[in-house]
Length: 394
Ligand SMILES: Cc1ncc(COP(=O)(O)O)c(C=O)c1O
Image 1: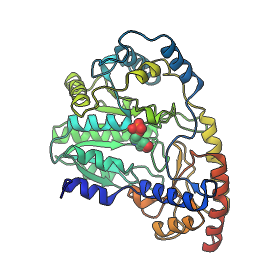
Image 2: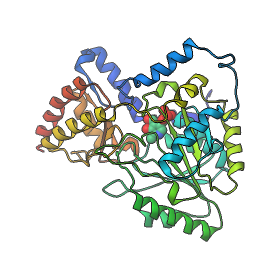
Image 3: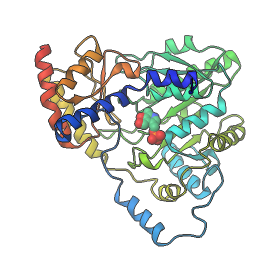
């Protein structure tokens, strides 16, 4: 055997999203790109905003000596200061550059944080439906995944959380706005979550980290703002990126922010910086750090995603599909009209509409749609959705 048992197991379990994506590639070869309606991947359809190209052009036209060299593993001080200034404005809490570590995306940030905090056997609690990579990230660093349910609105049940926390619990990993459900956790929920965690910390005399994976923080609709975790819990960490809000997923630029009031904060930050290095990221991409430094107040046109969400939501609900209108992200998570979500997704696939079964996110009975696609894809998918709805008598 050439690969490790863990990697073999992980490969076998695979990712539903990848599996559906590969099915899509095969269907596109067979029927032509324009006849396959692929709603599987959360890959932003929009290009980055004009300001991104302006900053990039400035850098290319005025190169600074040394701008491609190694740097501090935490990232450029000026970039971290710009991120901290924006976070302070948004949260009313005083962040400094020393609370920020620049990373290779939110995925890099999660891995750095988990590597820093986990001892073998430590438990990390996540909530279904979850971003499936969380399981890999936790297991990458010897952690044990504990999955808890959410309610009909996809909000975690805090009574269940309270009884699930034990002496081995090291962290609770949330993701708001949520992939795949689109749920945005409100202030009152976050406040109660903070109370539960504080109570449990006191009961067990140990620190429990609350990590919010928040790359969709700014992708929210109907004029709402996504509440931040900072006011509600001192041992908070945010892992995030500009993959979605600036449409830069291929550029791998993100950061970790830690609550300024975190106990032994400096030790934790030193750990992050060290792990950024030893996991082989070394530092976040230099050019991107320089660009996003100037773009902290800029986002892609969120109204465009809202228009796509509304279009699809209106049509699908009119056909009889049942779902919560997602207040954030680029996903919807309707109920599967068939008891078995995999069978339902296969049924849709017969009409060349590709979605992902909820089972891939730990929530059978649902399916995920990404609406970050071209309008022709959304429009073209409707016929397939309608055929299946009619067949099932919705
Ligand atoms: C919930 C969630 N977390 C993390 C990531 C990874 O983001 P990044 O590209 O910043 O690594 C994604 C990407 O789709 C995501 O949906």
